[in-house]
Image 1 (cartoon, helix red, strand yellow):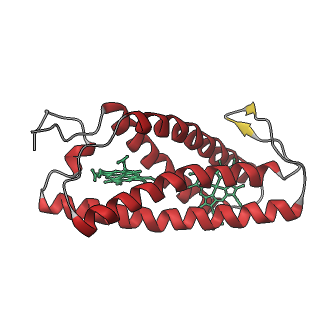
Image 2 (tube, protein in one colour):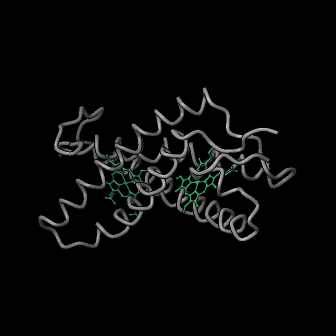
Length: 177
Ligand code: HEM
Ligand code: HEM
């Protein structure tokens, strides 16, 4: 009999990431349509700050994950392989999407700030490089959105089956499998 929950830090980082990423996709989707002005600038600044926060949290989360294996899988066969594949792809998206965002913002003439604090940029004003990282960022962000839809659909299916899968990611009484 082994405990089947994730550790508390893994849960906390999972749910903070989940909220931030959904917020970022919504912001990214809507901010470009705002009329030029203070509201649009504020939306872009918030998007960049929250995105950089995701990047910092991803480094922490990967560090924690490498030292703490997830609880043994509830499912087996192709479902277990698909779940592991989607989870690994989500980690890759959590790392590469904000990195591409950072790089696209680095190759512009504008300063980059993290909640008001100026961040060192690894680039210089260059429209071609900006366009390359912009395409990568948009591709990664929407691929991530598709993977998240699949991931959440699986979580809802497990919740409807009441098989304890969702409880693995939620705090509560210790339960054993
Ligand atoms: C309402 C939204 C979400 C729900 C209900 C949810 C639920 C879950 C559950 C139940 C697990 C554990 C799966 C298992 O034990 O096999 C899990 C794992 C995971 N989730 Fe989510 N999730 C949500 C959103 C997200 C988002 C937005 C991301 C990332 C962008 C994400 C990334 C991950 C990753 C990477 C794992 C694997 C953790 C590991 O094994 O290291 N989740 N999620
Ligand atoms: C996980 C983190 C992130 C997610 C999920 C995300 C998501 C998105 C999405 C969905 C869009 C709209 C794409 C479209 O036009 O269809 C977008 C645009 C944008 N993002 Fe992010 N983003 C993240 C991190 C970042 C970071 C860290 C930065 C910069 C520091 C950034 C800068 C931008 C910029 C400047 C745009 C507008 C690009 C343009 O001019 O079209 N993003 N993002």
